[in-house]
Length: 277
Image: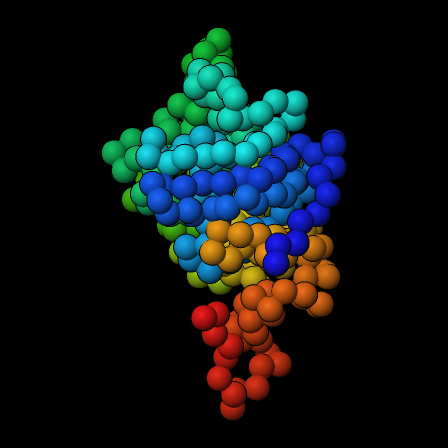
């Protein structure tokens, strides 16, 4: 059974009946959800459930072997109907993404300041070198990177894992997007740094009135950032609800198993955790 909320006409992102297939394999099948202005939707599910494929479809970054159907409405237009040049103008400017592994997402032989600058220059070619540098430093300050003026010429390997994630966030927000897609942004981080990144994302969201699609398999993380949660299983959305309702009164059996599979301080350690199979 699939739980689908009604689509509000004023949603910033409105996805209806999205399906993604690779040859005969259906990765995502007829899912629907929406994100309002300033809202964070958590998209959760186990590995292989279709979460990342959904995010890449929104940005039109899936490989040519993928077949994508349905409606991807952003603001007043259908993303699937845009030409590639039109999509390129919006990708990174109106819709930006934080990828889950900073060491593979960043170019190891290019200074981090240059990489952030490229994101600016791609959408603001009219800016002078000095103006681009100002925007780069402003973004680095916003994500609380230490000594941006000194470290702007450093390379990714000279930063810690948490700092590299902050660099990716700086690249994502430097053009002031309206929608931020965060794909497992805290997966490779220890719990202390993870908490710092979540605080940062919440602050940026409020400061810039960002809408966010937060993708994770970690329910504890999602509970800290999401206003609403959509649960995916085998390419379907099986339940959608407010974060409060979903975590305290889940309806779908898979959601219940997903919550029961994560240990808490109240978990009976004499009993095995629930499995998702």
